[in-house]
Structure formats: structure tokens, C-alpha cells
Image 1 (cartoon, rainbow, N blue to C red):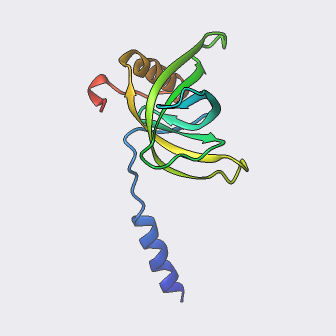
Image 2 (cartoon, one colour):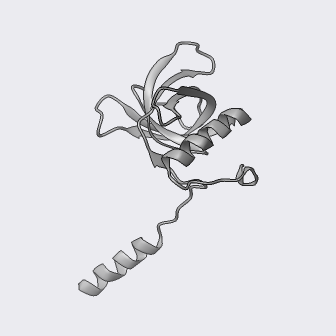
Length: 141
């Protein structure tokens, strides 16, 4: 029985594959979001974020493939006074119930459109937040 458990454990440990291009950082950042065809702005927050996408906790569940406009707010300097915001269009790649926040859904999203200056602002924030996080412009998708 112990040999079987060891084989199962080894198989599960070796079958985990990291599919992310960029490291993610856990960070609860406030967001505004709206559907492309519906201008009503709603509020939510990030659960984690990286250069290529984010996970958000929202009071609604989006379907895989849906596109959403998101405005992400964050402090970008040590003085904690300078507030920055970037806007992106993101596509939902998965969604499920948020077990830690009843009535909310976790939505994993991939950035589809982001202005170069917003990407640089995000990269700068991640570099400061993730100490040593470095990406050159040649690494960009």
C-alpha cells in the first residue's frame, strides 16, 4: 500500500506544469470594470496580478472568452500618495466561486489590450512590489 501511495505522489508531483509566462504577485488592488458593450462601471479587486493578466474577485461570474475593460488602481511610489491607474481589455480564461468571499466569483483573465505606457507603468509597479522582478521589452508578448 505504501508503494502505491509513493507512486501516486511521485506522479502528481511530476505532472504539475507551470503554464504562466510571468510571475504572479498576490495583491488586493481596487478595480473598476465594465463589459465592452455595457458602460455600467462596477467595483471589484484583484487577487493576484502579473504582466500578462490577473485574477479578480467580482460579484458576478463571467463566461470563458468574454472580454472586460478593467481600470486597475495602485500606489506607485514610496510616499504612498501617488495614485496610478491603468486600463486594459482582458479576456476571461476561467471562472469559479470564490470560497473565501461568499457571493463573489474568481475570474482569471489574460490581458488582450494594454497601451505601451500602461504596460510600462504596470511593469514598474511589479518591479517595486516583486523586488528584483525584471522583464526587458524583448520579453513582451
